[in-house]
Amino acid sequence: MAAIRYNDINTSAAWARLHQHQRATRHMHMRQLFEADSRRFQRFSVELDGLLLDYSKNRVTGRTMELLFELAATANLRDWMGRLRSGERINISENRSVLHYALRLPAGSELIVEGVDVVAQVQDVLARLTTFCERVRSGGWTGFDGRRIRDVVNIGIGGSDLGPELVCEALASFSSPELDIHFVSNVDGQHLARTLERLDPATTLFIVASKSFTTPETLLNARAARAWFLQHAGEGDIARHFVAVSTNTDAVRDFGIDVEHMFGFWDWVGGRYSVWSAIGLPLMLSIGPDAFRQFLAGGHAMDRHFFAAPFEHNIPVILALLGIWYNTFYRAHTHAIMPYDHGLRRLPAHIQQMDMESNGKRVGRMGEWLDFDTGPIIWGEEGVNSQHAFFQLLHQGTRLIPCDFILPLNSHYPIDGQHRVLVANCLAQTEALMRGKDEAEVLDEMGSVPDELVDILLPQKLFPGNQPSNTIAVDRITPYTLGMLIAMYEHKVFVQGAIWGVNSFDQWGVEYGKQLARRIEPELSDGAETWQHDCSTLGLIAHFRKRHRG
Ligand code: F6P
Image (cartoon, rainbow, N blue to C red; front, side, top):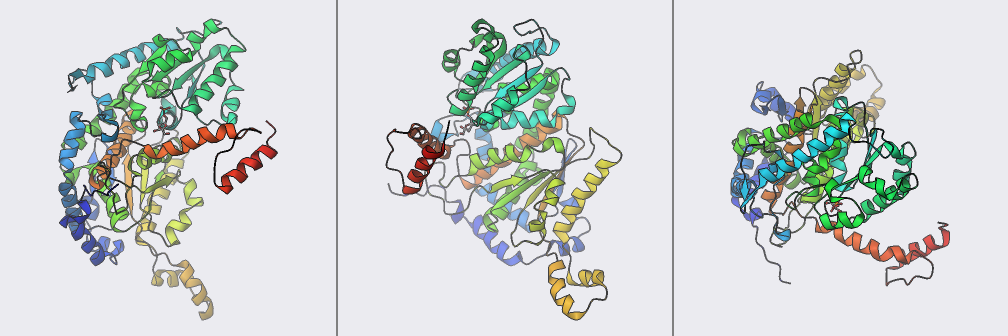
């Protein structure tokens, strides 16, 4: 197949100017930028509805930002935003619109796509979810022995797990004390078994969450959960204990779940963007329909901002461009996300799927090869635990690692001043990463030390600094602010994909491993035919056959 170059963003003048600018400014230190401009914080921060983005601790000047905005214009970003918003089928390889933002449109607004009233569809499902959640939460929906539901087990994986789990954890302080929500994703039997051993089948509700309803891990777990349930109850009781969230009605019916108890969504919602849809059912059960609508409202506030604000004040656009600055022009390979909030500890994992499954692509949306780096490796861990784990490398390692620090200014759990310690740590890290510690400061701290020791110790106590970070502060984590945060990252990912020219909404890369797993699974049994694998895979299959006692 001949390689066709379609997206020529990397041959544009804007791209070349950014390379040139990077070469000219790469030795500039942020410490000097701060010393030279006492209003740098004001110049490089944006506030929206109580969410503050401080991006002043980045290796940028006003000129850098101008050039980045020029790149966005060269890539026709506004046009792409319009296409997304109008429901054009921008997910070309799957011939689908990308309308997760429509899940957050308030009732009464209008969005007609290809003759379909999208808002009406969304609101219908929301109304059904609301009725269902109210019954479960009030105790009106009972299990097979007449007792109310106490535990909800969401069985799903990827986007049908990460988003819902994150939001339930993050909003635990808003949750109903009557219900415990559990998440089972891994096909490792340990995950389901350890969850079920604590539960009473008569008061447990299972949500089988799968957009496709063909994902083997989810179906295996769902079948195992049903088998466990049937040890204690009859087939006729399944209807009260199993509901489904999916786009695949036939598969749900075939599985044996009453489609009356299925909550649908649409092919224009990507799995990793689906927490706003019926996939968010665990959250609605946990915090209630009104608070769930607040979550949607927070996402919608970010959408309005994203679609309307000029790029210079547009939070997702700025974040995306800074990411491109490091990823493409500095060739930084990774981006770390550190939430200084225990409830947000699953945020890095959720953004990891959202970003890496979306922009981890090596070809453009029209199949053309891209000869520049696209999506970064997203990773991270909750602060302050991460400080005691990997911050050494951030401070004194050899790599450039841009970071996002997520900081709620108030805690739902105000234990004796602990939140101030948490905040102080967060701010201290961003400052230390930015300014570093120079020779004079180290010598000053060392006091009188013999010369030969100075030679050994001085280099070890130096901090180069100049490590970029964004601080994203919100008043506190509420359904609304959480909605803003997640939508902010979704749009960031979209902007980067639009500029790099990739389709951020398909995920062909996860298919190959699934195909091979289907082939290898029967081969793990003794006597089964073994394909022409490489000798490592053959060796491992043989090793398993010899040692497995299952
Ligand atoms: O394997 C990747 C993936 O397709 C994700 O994109 C998706 O979130 C996950 O699997 C689960 O898919 P489903 O909701 O269809 O079970």
